[in-house]
Image (cartoon, each protein chain N blue to C red):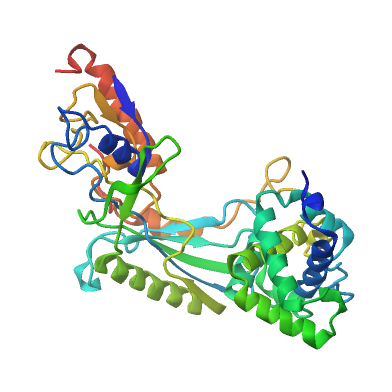
Length: 149
Length: 267
């Protein structure tokens, strides 16, 4: 069963709201926020073994807020978020990690950081030979470690 | 022939659970040293952020080693030493999670600016310290906890020694000097790092004296002639370096010894 089915609608709403509080969209950096639908879908689809902890964190958040997080005014929402971070323990830390890891693997975000959407090695990239003069003192130094007989 | 490779906790657990009338204190344990002398690799890490890009998205995060402080120099206040691993970060997900947890990456509008200052600019210096063999650091059998088969679980007693603490402090001080010289800012420490370095070593030590070791110099139990151990538990010292290559080398060495001694392997 996917996490989309395991989280209630209210929990998904709160997850989206708190995600946007962690990482809001930015016109200056031309990036979506962590409440972006694609990033949210990634979170729900890959929650996996983090589901129980994230659910626990969202339950804690709901208790603190007493109503949907999105319906609170900004000041109250900030206060709830601070309390959530201070008292949420491992469950809150797991929720934040899930938000960050899904956000920072989004193609649009990686492009905005100047990263290519692929691993740098292998397949095609060859590093230019560097200046290895840094190792010259090591090469001229006598052996210090005992050699195996 | 029985060959055990269950690591520095699993191997003593297996041996200590294997009691019989002939081996009331556990198999291969006439020395009483099975489970004792547990060694780890406590890591002391200090890191900061430099203006220059550190290419953290390319290749392994650990990119440079130093053995400058590896050997004993008593003027440092401790015996043995540590290797230094230089790290350059490990890509955006790692940087985001680690920095948020450390409290230097904020939530909200300033998140993006700060993240761009941190990501790809991390310079880390980690001291991988050589723990000493001490008998009070040990693996025993838990008197209560059992696995799903009802077999007693291992119980670990370990205290970070004063020697290792001094070594870690020394490594952090050298790391700070390096970071300051490199112009690093936002300097943070993890001492010890919680997520790594807890390599499991020393709990079935190798040696020629049956009273002071569990296996002989080619990996065969002193007490049980058809029992061999080829994992990190046979280490006598821990070294200030990751142990996998050495464990592999020992396994190959023991296998070679078996082959060479085949005619009288169990004598």
